[in-house]
Image 1 (cartoon, rainbow, N blue to C red):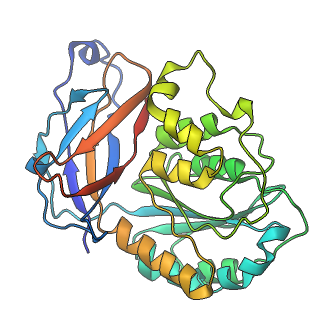
Image 2 (cartoon, rainbow, N blue to C red; image 1 turned 90 degrees about the horizontal axis):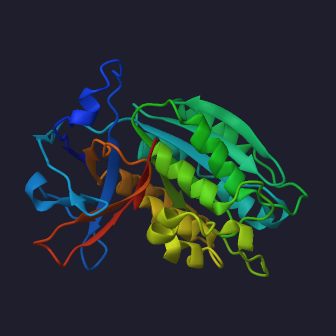
Length: 313
């Protein structure tokens, strides 16, 4: 299914006009998944159906570019390969050949990294299905107990910083971070700044007793974090991957069996290629975290998922 594109442009403000030497035009890109009550993707909405709020302020829709084709996808497959991942590794090795035809297509590129007590790049970005497949097929679980999930997301986001088009991370891991140097608030700030969508295919983390430490939570002096993500920080006490997917508008596809992981990749491909893409220029004059709200006011029967914030420099 061809992704729907809605591009939103607002008039330049007086403040922007006072910066004649700034030629870069930034837009906030918001992929939106729209489903019905049965979880089926909803097609056929138009620019007039959506409302977008930036910190409560409606955004003007000035241009409809339906039918222009989907932006290329940059996908990082981030795989936990610590000792606890050993039972899942046989299932994971089989999904490399599905990535190019189902998720990134011929115009996109994928990279592969693993994380245990270290984050390691196994394959740089490539559009070659064979290279992706070999990188995933050759993975082995190690003997380490750590799972530096946050550090892996940070590394993937940094590597995608200058890439054009859509930026997606697929986490194949337990639901909890173990031992990262980065903290959740840093990770959320980074993925929102870079416009990264996080999807997750978590495997069983039975026996994991890690909970968020106080330093994982936002400091009292950060009201933007508290206003936008207070519920997500509470959720992260038990499930880090779910907090990240909800913050960025992604989904979770838990798996136990091999076929369930293959199904997760199929669902990921179907979702990213059926999303509506909303774009608007960042608000002038206010730096820091901005809350995004997307709705379809005349269709209360629909369910929407999208990123919840963006970071303005």
